[in-house]
Length: 410
Image: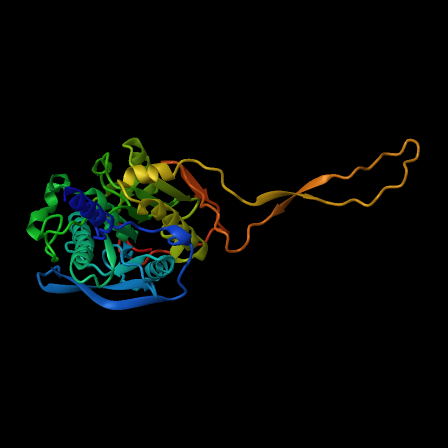
């Protein structure tokens, strides 16, 4: 009898398909190639209520992108936040909608969120609080999806594979969501306890808001010590001549009391120093958010995000997974195959005449169109440069000056 019970237990374990045990299937090019031709967009999905600047309850909405016709029961999710310096911008920002659509065609569920804007007074403290409020809203979006995964499963999201990303101010929010995880780390002058602490009051309390990884596009951190050993991996995409948010170390908010911040280059350096797997895509000679005006830069950001995310879809801790995936490997360009080229018969040689013999020539045979070659990989902490077309001229930013903890929109 005990053998029957043991066999039943083993069968139960093998058939367990609960969210905690489900794995992400990456076979067949899923999450690397566009497997889906169309994307379904669910607009105006309410994910939270939060108090605005004057204390009124404000509903928060997002647009959710899903691959049309997908039958997978549990899918990874990426929550994106737009740029705008915490003063402007909406969830239908062109960069966010493009990234959400392209990643959804690979098989991801993606979401572009709205978050609370504006701040007063217009100083370092005011914009610092605005950055915290935006981070609370991103955390609320993560909790919303984890609650959905545990209840109605409307979006069929895997709760263990939720990533965050954003551009400029949204990049600041993403980094804060991942690495500002202790109330004691927040400067006392922000008084975050007065407006909900790190998590905020956006709903679905009790669910974790911790992401599995971060995609930072031209954002920064105000304190590198927030990034500690054991934290989640990060992908940084940043222009080396960014005049608003420094690529390395610098200041933002020039008319305000200037605040020192650390851009994508410095964040990657810190991550490497503490053993956090990371990818740095350096946009050589580019300014702030160049992908907003030049499609080639947007392609670069998409490819960097795609190749960063896919290794993190396995089972296990995020850090070791990405560290193993980013070991240096040769980059395949073409498949070489020896092909004999026939040579016409030669007449009998005359004295002092060079004899020509048949030779074997190596010819490059390009892989068929639908043959998936391994994606190029990057060693942990090693930066790569993107050589781009002629440098686009960045127009003057019409937005107010950059904040202490977040940059303004270009």
